[in-house]
Length: 349
Image (cartoon, rainbow, N blue to C red; front, side):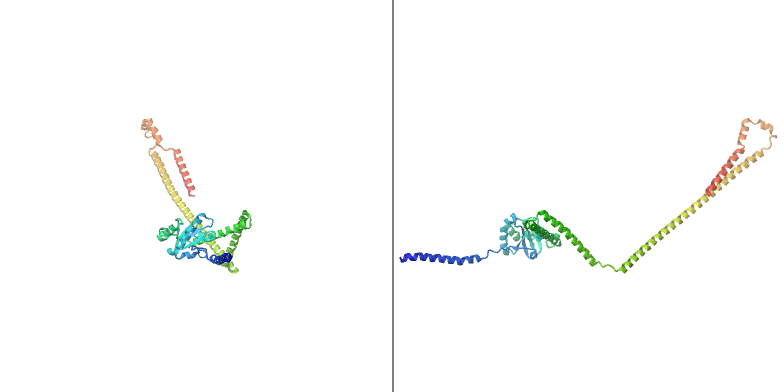
């Protein structure tokens, strides 16, 4: 009887002890923190850490399947970061669009190697072994670095980061309008168009105000003086131009007068030469007429040598008659001489 009664009591005590142990062990197990990730999230505020030391960065998006497949490999690579003496980071392009623009990320996932501020693009697979060999064998030395304007630390990429961050904020605002508030998409587009116009007008106003601050207008009396000086300078220039034109006209007139005088002198010389030639021709003609008359007088009266003259053949008599000058011919010559003189006189005038 005693043994039968003790059995249930012992069973109840054992069950109570197990329950107490389980109750005490449960909170301790729940209080144990999960294994901490060795991958450091990078943001716009701490990305400058990659400018010192050696880093490997991964750009991903939560919705990207390829990025999700490489998460475990990236975590394993980060656990060996202390052995490899390298830091491992990751960037969420949805939360940090500015960093994706700074590194000009166009495909996901994207990997970058950084060594003392010099960046290189890693284009291999995101597998732990390949990543480890890339660091141990220093394969990154054979990859061309991103230098000049392509460097994430350059001024150009800083501007690109600003543009990407603005576009990301606009995208989040559009999602807030369409998803959270339930506004139609076209209303959101109209809002952004109006906001762009208003922003442009505001920036123009700011530029005008800045220009007015830096540009100090002259006092009224100084401006009037400057206007008077400008007008006097313009009048002086106009006078100079007018004087130059008058001098040019005077020089042209003098040249024309000189040329006219030269032409008149040449005409006078030509007229004198023509007159001399005409006088010579007149003298020659007069001399010829005198000779002919003297020859006619020398022949004497027709009665002395009548016999001989009658014996002359008719042909010789006709030839002698033709050789004697005719009064009509002399008149024609004199008329031609008079016409020439009148023509030369007209030319001289």
